[in-house]
Image (tube, rainbow, N blue to C red; front, side, top):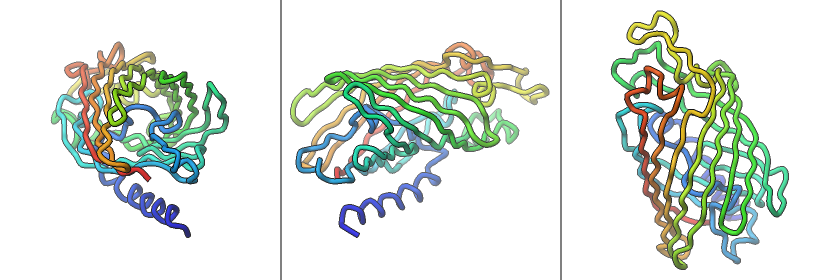
Length: 274
């Protein structure tokens, strides 16, 4: 086993161990460009390596659950890996590029979607309001033109948590302020099917605290984000990001979230490039 593969094995073990531990409190969503577009800067001397990526530690501030007013801080692993520019891992996501052309990269993707636990959300919610962790599978497509990028990811739920669909659309631009500092503004939105929306925002008949609510499908969240990257040394980066999102329509009207329609997330961390 060569040194690079040995390092990747260790990193993979760390990710598998760390992800469940942080699953209920850490926001595993990406900041900046996704791996399949080029979220990891690859220098000439690294392009010949089969494995390229980054691993680091990040301090996160995020809501306890979508629609929750209380925010928590947590320390988590930030792992982004690409194998031969085809297979990739990005924190709670794993995927494979099936087609790669000048203006289109597309393939299959899966993710671990954190659930909602009664001890992590509002005190007026009880055990009956829990939602288990879900594994979701789907497709992605992305395009980049110079430093502009557009992406779409569609997921379908598996198991008993939900069998609905979710589609995420994002667009952003990479600003290279200088050779050591980059900024990436991103805007996007998320659409959910009726089954997906009911699982996360619906209230069943006979709830002890809230009136029954049937959540319909549609665009339920829009967001704006600004991430940054500062080169500390050849293989070390200081990364950060701030994201504001707003729940809309069926999500915003849900008794579970109507008091906290605006959500804020932030993170800062140090990563090592390999």
